[in-house]
Image 1 (cartoon, rainbow, N blue to C red):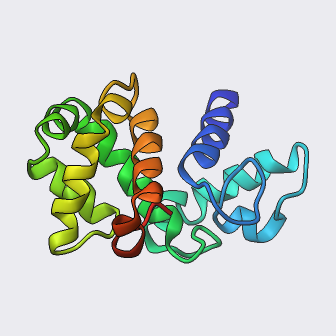
Image 2 (cartoon, one colour; image 1 turned 30 degrees about the horizontal axis):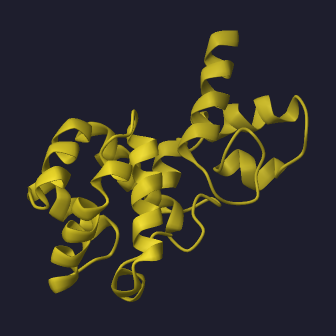
Length: 158
């Protein structure tokens, strides 16, 4: 039982990253107990994962699990980058590829801004492609998107 509770708390704090809730993460438990400190978060985590599964709340954006959809978009980027990390690094070095195009769309880039995104990532490959983890890679890409004048108007690092 202790393992289940520890996993529930860890899953809640890892999967749901925005909102006004405690370490148990978003969900029904967060609506009931908020961000109260202490052991009550174990109860909140249990409620989050038993009554209405937290993953359902995150996916549907209910029960305090999103903040204007930003959490879901960021999480999609994280999942995609982690699953395609090596392919992305290779395609970024080339400045094109299916995975880079999908990543560009996850940054909100459309039309010609996808090519601008790909070119910008390629020209900053030393910063972006030589990262050890997908999280570091996304952080570097966020920096590229924020610092490129044309990308800040057509894409979003938020």
